[in-house]
Amino acid sequence: MAKKKSSFTDRILEDFGEKVLDNHTKEVTAISTGSLSLNSAIGIGGIPKGMITEIFGMEGSGKTTIALCTAMGVANSGNKVLYIDSENLLNTELLKAVLGTKLTNPENIVIVTPDSAEDCFMIAEAGIESEEFELIVLDSIGSMMSRKEKKLEFDKDTMMVVPRLVGKFIKRNTYGIRTSNIAVLLVNQVRDNVGAYVKSLSSPGGHVLHHQAAVRISLSKGEDLKRGEEKVGILVKFVIKKNKLAPPFRSFTIPLIFGEGIDYLSDLLDFSKLIGVIQMAGPYYKFEGVNLAQGKVATRAFLEANPETLDRIVKVVYNTINKTSTLIELIDDMENTQEEEE
Image (cartoon, rainbow, N blue to C red; front, side, top):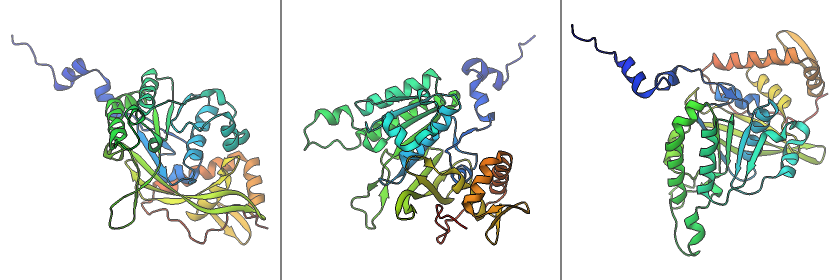
């Protein structure tokens, strides 16, 4: 009797292992950025695990602050973060200056300051292979310098060295990132497109990064936030330039407070008002037909004292966003998120 042939599925399982078939069936999970509006705009509650996310923008647009707030959430939950600081600017004092007392488990953030682009990617690759980390942050692509650039004279050209390294790192590690279910967040800067007919900006790192990133988030600095005459923070506008998990091009603003990071409650209230989850009845904030409090300050205090209501609002926001295909647009006349309403 002729031997029965193995099915295609049986053969590839035997030759390549179960991960070949299992990867596409896993639900994509997310790591919170600390901003309800940004988490909702991405569509799954934050930056995706098992994939690459790029966040880019001009100087002072909040890139590192949002990366640190994302890392803080992971560290405070008891998991580990590998933060690769190619800019050689991050230290304990900067963590305190950005996050204040919100960071309760700083020991869970492993900060390394490599000497070259090659070292950055080798350390990131070792972090992926170790499977010790839930999040790996590389801050930033635009500041990297290769060993070749360090050795050559200043007048020698070294174009495309770092983009080639970026492409090589991504192609070598995409499978490991997916199978290990690690979130990789690449912070990037922007550069002028020299020679372009119309003035424009682009993020360095090459086409591989732009193609392979599951989510690309553009940041730009908005207006200052003030308490009286004192400048206490900034508004940062985000635009989801690419999204493989939900509709792209959603945008809104995030309030960043100096010494605290993202102002979660102001972000929640403004965003919830925008999409109609919270309504205004005169000076009162209203949710599901019930008055919460009068004015933003009192409403923030109410939500801090009533976490069940806060959680309910968050769930309704996600449900509302996931059921609509309309874009989240920036409201130009949106009130200052730090203005105390009476």
